[in-house]
Length: 130
Image: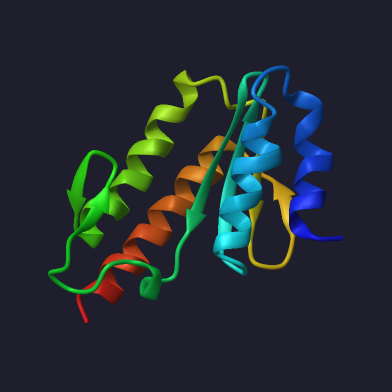
């Protein structure tokens, strides 16, 4: 089964509003970065997907790219991932938390999601420093 189809099967029953978060936006995120690991948070008012990009997906050293309402370097973009994780408990996206490890999609706890992000940001920061 394709990963997005599996994600829809598991997450859609939880969503009462904003199903396009899952059906359109999350599919686009998965299709745009195939093979990337991701965390997926579902609540009755939609979803949040956090793609764990590869180092080459980030801007190069000393490069700034358009980001949200301004421009950002790779460290700023990476920090944004940690900021999203911290904000999620207040965003009604905690009914189902899934982790795609590059091979399988499995349910995890919020604490495990925070741990995954901590490990990921450390790895990326080390790769950026090379």
